[in-house]
Length: 596
Image 1 (cartoon, helix red, strand yellow):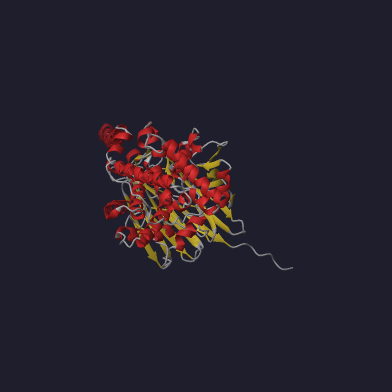
Image 2 (tube, rainbow, N blue to C red):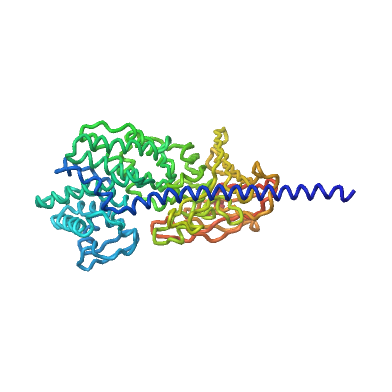
């Protein structure tokens, strides 16, 4: 009898091991094919670039260079005249690096970092010289532009001639042409126009060669603006408009989010798209409907990410919010649109009750070419009350902290659940492919289910993703409810077997809630809860069904003055049959002192 029971048990175990091996093998094959596809695309683009800038550039030399500018688009980014004084003194601060040129042209110096070189060659800093509005600043602007044209004005394999830097430079030259050209000689004017024509040819060749990602949209914006601002004829305007419309349709999602899922991309694009819309009006040309629709959708989407203090939520590459730029963008919002709350295409949900705001990442990774800055933060959330943040994600460090930037993309740097310290996404850098794939995501959740319920008691979002299915056979489900009284946030995290898995093996998991640096956290009730105290004395109590709430160190990268240490609440457990953790944050009143 014993043997009759034992044999089927062994057979079942063998079948289960075989099924798991086949599932894991299938996941690895799928990931390998995806990586191979990425590499093939990158190899083709590298081959095109290897043909040589001179060959690509020669393809467009037949075109006549426009001889004069007709309009100069407005630059709506914030200007600082004091930076003009620093530039005149020879100090160039870009990408977190400060360089003293010591009387030499900055374009003669060895770049201290690629980011510094790109920002220098992008010429966005010309707006500060224009803001100074002095003869000295105008002369300084013209000299620096002339230095660039002399030392690096021809396409070559340097950061200054990367497509994004070239597009940024064209936009800056067009918008800041009044300060550069005022009082200039005829020879300099002609040279300046030839430089614009050369950059236009370069960008067209890059687009024809397969330029992809965010750089493709920026190049289309630059070419559309070039056609509108110069005496170039209707042909170039039509061509630029066609390129612009196509890329906006591809990269701006129906709810107004960017395809990269990065809020910062909206902040970067709107200051270029808003003046471009004005340029069409100034030339009496009908703007493409894709441009008008994109702007109308992007502003409410940007408001979705906004917390009570005005800063944007820290998802998928968003860092420190520039408040002055955000205020400028919203000033152009004629209808003062309310924030979007349900952005299914972009993968975000916003819950509001009174002064309480919850913003949740409910989407998978973006397409690979747009995933270079995306994070493994599916199902993470942020929670603020009024102008105070309580639960946050870690955000993004500056470009000079490469190792920290990689760590900040991991699931553990987000307020969500992580299994066995394993991210729900895998990044190209993990396999030494970073050079080719620029840190793209090679695997991650490809199925995210979402349900939103508006109920009398509050709003509930239920989501589930399969980011852990390939490695652990687990689906992570999360439920978050913001109560209408704005005094309570309830949540539950459930780990259940994926459809292909019959049971779950035991693995450690951690449920993490990163707390804003301004909030003090301490364990109470013998470690079963955590008390969160705001600077103004407001108190919120965290409770969990597991009975333990550990307080651990964390780091917040998105502070304006640099990274700051903070705390995180961690709840630990083991995966099993439908492992579940209930948790809540609730406001508790301060005790009033008794009279007498």
